[in-house]
Structure formats: C-alpha cells, structure tokens
Image (cartoon, rainbow, N blue to C red; front, side):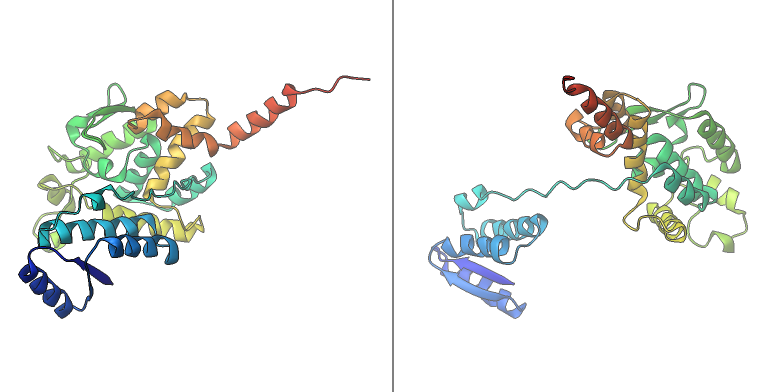
Length: 287
C-alpha cells in the first residue's frame, strides 16, 4: 500500500509520521501538492478496478491520515466523489427450495428459520425478539428498533403462532424468546430448559447461520443463499400471491418503497402477467 504525505508547515510532524509509517512497512511518498493523492485514488478506481468499498476505505484512510494524524486540512479531499456500490439483484429461492432447506433444519434453529421465512425479519431482529414482542392472540409480532430505529408490526401464520406458543413453554424465559443457554451448560447441574430459563442473553446468530448453511449444502440449494435469502424469498413469494408492494414494504420495514420495488423483477408471476399483457397491447388488424 502507498501512503502520500503532503508538505505543510509542520515538517517535524511530517518527519515523525513518515518514519512511523515506514517502520510499519508502508511505502511513503512525499509530495508538495495533492495531485498524487488524486492520482492514487484514480489508480485504484481505473487501473486496479477495485470495488467501491475498497475505494471508499482508501479515501477514508487518507482523510484520517491528513486531518487527524498530520493535522493537514485538505478541503478538496472530502469533496472527491465516492463510488457507489453496484446494486445487485438479491438471491431468491423457489418455494420448493425453501421447503427443502427448512425440512432439514430441526429444533430451535429450524423454528427460527421458519420464522424468518414466515415474517421477512432480519436474522438479528429474530434473535433479539422478546417475549413481550409477541401478540399471539392477534397473530402479530412487534419488531422493535429495526433498521432505521423504527418499530413495525408483522403478521404471523396460524402455524407459527402455535409453534411459538409451544416453544416458549419449553424454557419460559421471562425476557427472551430465543434465550442462549450459555457455553458449558451441559456441565452444570441444571437441564437445558433450566439453563435457557435463567439466560440473560439471546441466542447467537452464528448458530442459526451455520445450521442454515449445513441444510443448504445438504439440500443442494443455491450456494449463494443465506439466512437473509429467506427474507428476500418471503417478499417475492408474497408479491406473487398478490400482496401489495406497499404492504410488503411495511412488513419489511423499508424506509422507501423504492427499496421494495426490486422484488417486482424477481417474481415468476409478474413475468407471466407481463407476457399476457403484452399480447393484448398490439393485435394486428385482420386483412
């Protein structure tokens, strides 16, 4: 990696910073202007063709180096355009693929995966569900402090209501719906259900991710699928069933409807409807 030092009125600071960076293994180039900084960022973008995230990291590092370490103000450096990440289409599983993966997930992890697919929640939102967030009488979940710090209501399927009611009776933790028994619980005097009842922390999301990964591999499903894929599949399949885009956006907790529109490009039903509509748009006159 190359570091550029711009000459300023504090040569002692510049000398110390240069020596420190060299001792750390960096290649240091000293320049009288900021042209080399721009050239370096252009080199990353055009010659090395780095990802937008890598380019942004380099720019942020340079801003920190000059402003916070060297005390050199380069106002124009903060105005350099940051490249945007390309918007990729999310991975969506077909309904039978979802069923195949979920059928291979058992116990608590299976329940959580089914809940992810049945509500469109993010994994961390699911892991941090509290008992008081459930309204089983109305068949709803309150997702509190989701992305953007907003609360939202998500409906539950009747089968999910029964599963969650039965699950809570297993551990009866007063706070967490999915409590963590903690490491080494088997070596203690109490049972798993007792350990979960006394738990003060929720379950780790990594355990659910690993269980999903193993089930996905065993089922032969798209290797790009993750727990978050269940959220994308939920939205796409609801759209195929005729649920409005606005309603789906509310269930997902999107700040803008524009974020939800991407799912219109992923549905088989919408594609079929488009083809049917195209046939009616233009009908050649009979001779």
